[in-house]
Amino acid sequence: MQKAKLTFDRSFRIGEIDDRIYGSFIEHLGRAVYGGMYEPGHPTADDMGFRKDVLDLVKELKVPIVRYPGGNFVSGYNWEDGVGPVEQRPKRLDLAWQTVEPNEVGTNEFVEWCKRADSEAMMAINLGTKGIDAGRNLLEYCNHPGGSYWSDLRKSHGYAEPYNIKTWCLGNEMDGPWQIGHKTAEEYGRIAHETGNAMRMFQPDLELVACGSSNRKMPTFGEWEAVVLDHTYEIADYISLHTYYQNFESDVANFLAKSLDMDAFIESVVAICDYVKAKKRSNKTIHLSFDEWNVWFHSRQADSEREPWQVAPPLLEDVYTFEDALVVGCMLISLLKHADRVKMACMAQLVNVIAPIMTENNGAAWRQTIFYPYLHASVYGRGEVLRTLVDCGKYDSKDFTDVPYLEAVTVNDPEQQQVTIFAVNRHQEERMELSADLRDFAGYAVIEHIVLEHEDIKATNTAAHPDNVVPHNNGDATVTDSQLTAYLAPLSWNVIRLGR
Ligand code: AHR
Image (tube, rainbow, N blue to C red; front, top):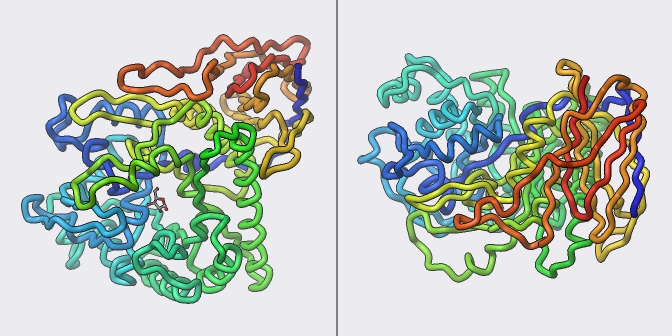
């Protein structure tokens, strides 16, 4: 049996959790929009054609913010195509995903969908084929009350009230050669600065996200962030990070350790932000928007074989395994451990496309395995993160050394007087005795110990078997004389909830 000891105290605060770290992402890609959030003929469709079964699952996840409309898609998008009478909207070729975009859903429908999902919109603008005008015109269309060309156009489209959208992404993955309108760091830094500047002239309190690297393996990583921030430091509030993990080799030990890469990625970007801050002798701190993260690899082969130029074909439809849910759990813990600097994050994506929610056209909607760690973190991971020292055994894998068998973090919610420990036992065979001295939380008892476990690491949830991988709350955590003890199953995601 493995042993792990946790140490945490009320005053060892890493930082306040910004709820927006539980954000998500909807791109015009595959069946995310058409067949996912929107399907007018579906039995659960509401008056605007939004699937209520999907909306219910999104609300269950308590998603605070949703990034839209891309992704790679945004770099060729004319937002003007997606507003006004639907029958007059053009069908366009989307070069990013080689599909046909019918434009039945656009900005106004998305903002209305966000309201119905109890969420907030995070808009991305096209800095690939477009530029400053894409930012300032869309901003005026969305946020100006009226009396100007773009705001009156919105009103004429039937949306009288301005949206006051606060958070805007200045392009998407502009460092990537696959991006339409790909740029060097200098080119992007300049256009992002000028666009952000124009947008702030209209509304100074916007929150603007500059594009960081598409992932940590990009050859330009590091230098890209430094150059971009050099240009955008005054106008940007956040720099973005994206990462997706794979397990093509079926190397469980190595796959489960991938969150160490996420830790290192975050810490490197924080260091670069602070380097630019020092260089500029600035008092302003740039925060991180981890606005694309997930596991993504199952669908890659199928996607490479499909016919181009279809409307809403099934694309990036990863069917997630139990093992993927453990990696997603570790990734959520990584985001929480850096809550002082990661203030926004978006699981990519929300429905059908590398998503926690899957649907059939004209059929069911169900929860994938990765839905559960996301749900637990979003619902119970609110408050402040406590530095959590983890004393446990370690292992080496193909790409990592000293991987702790236990990945864990503690969240304190002083208002509710509740403490939640999120923990993954990475050991493939052995149970783990977890102990913690609750010295600073005297009187706290176990509310529940939720566990996600399965005897088959490749188990999935499907339309036919939607409840194959589901959590239970029969974990055995106990508190005696302020000593917490729990036995964690090998390969398990655990949520230990304590309260007074
Ligand atoms: O989320 C899928 C794609 O991954 C996005 O369109 C792009 O930004 C990233 O490369």
